[in-house]
Length: 115
Image (cartoon, one colour):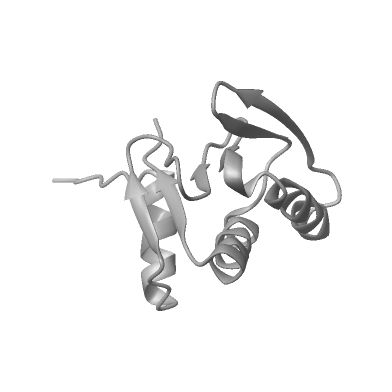
């Protein structure tokens, strides 16, 4: 008998963060209105930035370019939250570094349970 266990990208991220003893994050179902939230997807990751953290988008863009020079970002204001869309993909280690950077800079990060 063969049993397959499928892990979502969110499960893989939280497992890695737990192994690295990172605690200042939460897995949520929808973007937070007070903290930066990440929707990790292989086809177009999104970062949700609350209005009061508007200037964080510039630091995040710089950090993403530092992690991968081929990934570009586009930010739009969608109702009451900024949505940063990544054009290109980050690897899992790069995404872990980005989450750790957000936690270091902002104190907390939300990971949105993806599709």
